[in-house]
Image 1: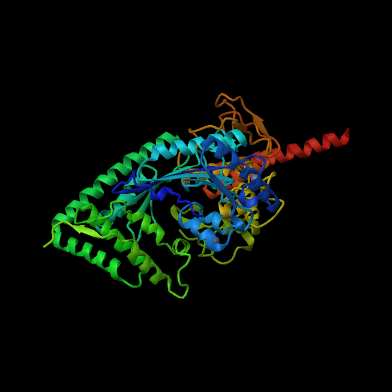
Image 2 (image 1 turned 90 degrees about the horizontal axis):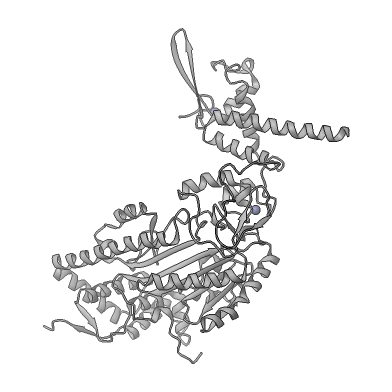
Length: 354
Length: 210
Ligand SMILES: [Zn+2]
Ligand SMILES: [Zn+2]
């Protein structure tokens, strides 16, 4: 591939200090096929072949390139890259039956076939532009709807294989960068608080609430009994409040512990700049510290196009091997990571040179 | 509360006895209660309370049925006619097998949804070719006018006059009632099942005579 393709996570226009990305996912099933758990191998293949024909149509109607493939026929390494960049779900990754994927060139729209549900439409964007991707996902949904027949019941709405998705089949989520909230120990309280709105909090790049990059996903738990616009509305409301709190806490934290915070930020930069091996977990935390420093005006990257969250994505193991194909395979993944970060980390302009 | 007899299971039946003006409370799990009932008073050992007459009738019948339904038995278990998903595997994996499972297991789904996410009616987007799903006719999707929701559909009030599959559904409801320890409802359901099953038998006899 010679042509330079801008992936969704390389877009910097919509950059936000707290909201890293926004994602919408719709779970859909077709009539005439059993759900995943009871789907025969032959029907699975039929389903994948049938839905994959939709690639041409969406390409024509959206007027941009879409790719499609049989996911089960990819190599494990290829699948891992798709998983790390969120183009496929763990369900799809681990399934042995026929599975398929239709993916836009910039990877912002993905249509997963025969994962947990027959079809899962996902749209993702940088920053907090939920409206943009909700509209996009809805358009794709309408297109598929006009081609295939969805399983739907008036009482339960879109019928899904799990009761956790039934109704709208919608999971909308914001990926949030929450170092100050995490450090101040307010995460648990927020978790309880947002549960009242039918929302939940999930750690990313880590298990449970502990997340090394201070990245947390806020999404709706409820999928039935609320309309799509209700779900978006409560999510937006809650995320707005979390964002304000995070920014306030960052500034307060800095004001109270000026020397300590500055030391932490510069040390993190130093380690990232000169370390020879970096574990993923450590690298994520260090990157988070310098992003915090950038927000607080302690350091400023000389290259303004530098995006920390993109780098966080690129240093995930499979992604790292994929973007560095010529790398010496004798090296450990941690030293490949350190080298990659050294190369990518921009020079910094410090506020006060003393 | 732990069962007074096996000292292992959770007690589901609390029985208050008044002897000479003194109240004693005894607790039993459903397994022991049904066992006692079957064995009758005479076979009870040692200090166990006289149970036979108290837990007769209602209890024995549905308890036995309930216990039977918990032991794997292909013929007793509700199975989705479209995809073959069994009730027990649905309960175990919490995954449905096909759209028709929503009808087959509707009683349990209703309750599970309430636990997972309250508010169990869809109020959002409707697909263009929305098809109304009828729990009475598994596998049969009746086409609906393009314009929007019609009043007909799964679970709408008063519309459910269930027929052949209703025995299965009632059995699920019965299981549900026992789990919820609603024994009044369980007794009613048991009677209803008996009634329907007898009806079936009667019909067969009539047809046979013709
Ligand atoms: Zn017992
Ligand atoms: Zn089924």
